[in-house]
Length: 258
Image (cartoon, rainbow, N blue to C red; front, side, top):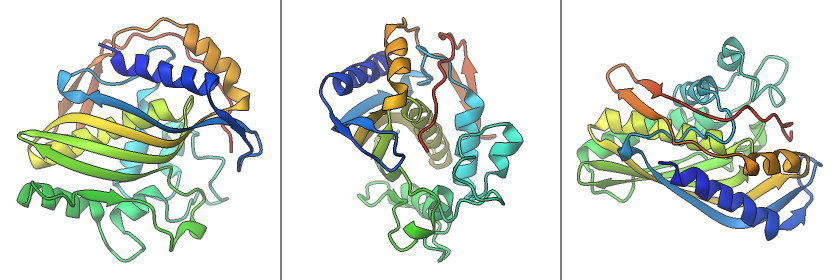
């Protein structure tokens, strides 16, 4: 029960073998490939927490809560001991109108996309407009970092809810495994709110890249054997996710490209 992580490994190998080297905003450099895709299904009751290296639930759980609550300060991360946003925040811990702001208060105009989405899924399930867009050109210059994942569309299939995600920029080694967990967490929440079962997620990554300072770690990861994904239990009443029997290899540390 780990097809997704095997597919992810194949994408890493494709990038290593067939990519272009590019200069980038971080000045570190990276190898990049155009348009990579991954898919998985939550209806089998296995949660996509990668096993070839240790991952930490508190990281994606904290980011999920930060996102759906529309927060733009890193205090929640600091309180949890999670440092993933430290390098981008200002001296007061602010990031500007990033992910959650656009979700809950789009363009600072009080437009709550999450609320609109949930209402639409309940009252007009066959609509083709179940969309969340985090890309807001008007406020991009006010953001510490423009959103990497920026488009979500939802599709009701009988009693199941599917989600399609577009990610403009995909840090394949450090970012994407946690993005996958975050998207899964978000689908569980929304499906629970509208009385449907979380099902398939399709992730489309436009610029899939591996940074030059992470190549050694990527190759170490590729040598590791994988385990089955852990099972999960989700209590929609309390919005509580429980991960069951998570087996994994040791943590592989790498520097974040800032």
